[in-house]
Length: 321
Image (cartoon, rainbow, N blue to C red; front, side):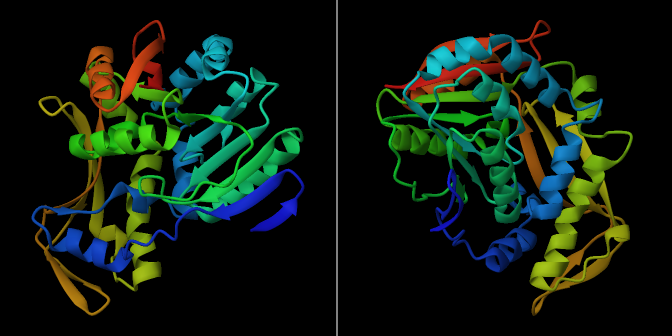
């Protein structure tokens, strides 16, 4: 462990052991082609996503922040004074600052993120802002098993904002929630943001912004493959496509091949037909009742839910049974 400042500590929770090359190749050889959204988040991808959260069309972040600001003291009370706060996919740790304002007694905060450089940069900044909190930054893929640092606080509360839970396929979501319940132990808590079903025009606009930041975010995935796996994707030969699939209750994101082409990745060649897509992300939307039922089946008891006035977004506090 490397300690740079007294109240910030850096840990490697797992080595992201998945073989990126093999996983990407398997996805591109599948029909239809797909790539896991976790590969969006290199440093550039993380920065682009932060830009997305500030867009006019992208309602989830500002709506969730509104809910956090309005109900932060209720949320802090649900979390408890003697807890350690763990954040999955912490990114810039911007949202958690609202909670920290309402939890002056908090002693330990554990941000966990797959993007190591971005994580360490954010953790350093947060440790300076909150000198009384021990910040344990853990570089890890939180969807896999990872090692937690040794902590003083007994009760664990996970903060999982942004409706990132909607990026999991239904069977993966169940496994992830069960794994989280196992990490937290009985009595532990999960404060989670969940995007709600709403008019498709609002959803489609959120993933097709006029400035094209979401397009750049999607296409940056190909930049990453070119850089890290020595692929030869030409970004101008692909376009961004996102839409709400009402029957499946999800927004889908794809990269569309604009012509017949063959891509080299390592020693392999991948053929694309014009119009063929790489499915890069799903973002499932729920009703409050749907999500609470899923959580109940995965070892949690729903305790509290907070919404905005339009009921576009929800935050749930769940406790491990």
